[in-house]
Amino acid sequence: MSTHHHLGLGIDIGGSGIKGAPVDLHKGRLAAERVRIPTPQPSTPEAVAGTVKEILDEFDWNGPFGCTFPAVVQHGVTRTAANVDERWIDCDAAAVLRRVTGRDALVVNDADAAGVAEAEFGAAGVGDGVVLVVTLGTGIGSALINHGHLVPNTEFGHLEIDGFDAESRAADSARERDDLDWEQWGERLTRYFTHVENLLWPDLIVVGGGVSKKFEKWSPHVHTRTRMVPAGLLNEAGIIGAALLAHR
Image (cartoon, rainbow, N blue to C red; front, side):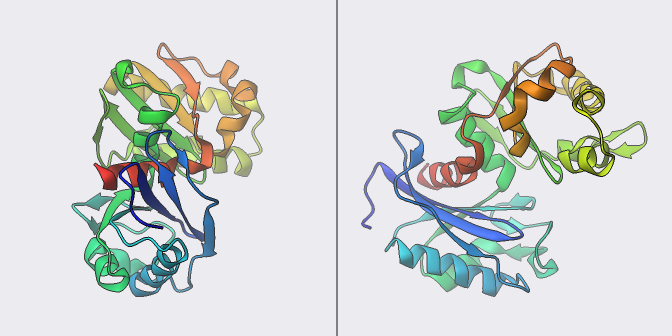
């Protein structure tokens, strides 16, 4: 697939799978069926980069690409490693990907990539001012967007609230672990979002992650002063955001 100016390619690296697809950057959607390959175990930088190369080769993609990663990413260096091999800590991920794949890579935190995609093509428009995108899953991911511009590597899932790491009480995994009904979980989410609102005063909160599909079940039990909407792009947001950021 040759590089067209309206096409990008995004890769989404997770603890269990690595997914990738070309993206139509005008429409904000995948331009071909995505490819998913299980994440190699152990998930060392070399092994993961090899899998990324397989996906690029599958699409015959030779240009620059964007790549999400479940970690804090500072200027292409992965500073943390959630659900992946600890050899990623302080690894120059962009350099490893460039060497192994032979293409230039832009590496970005996975929640940040999803946030950028939502702001550009999803539930949040650039006119919405300060947008907080929160993904509720195993943990709580966050992305802060100001008039379309990303403030990278916010870790608002790890705020300490009532003596607890917020995600240990309010993530979707905590709902399942503590066997909470929607109303009980809603109380915890209200506590979480109220705290975040008082720090950031966002204009809009977009909620992603698997539970965004069940938004109407739990959202009535969450009380915020900020308007809250479900994510629009669901599981493709990371791929789309990574491709967009690499293109920019």
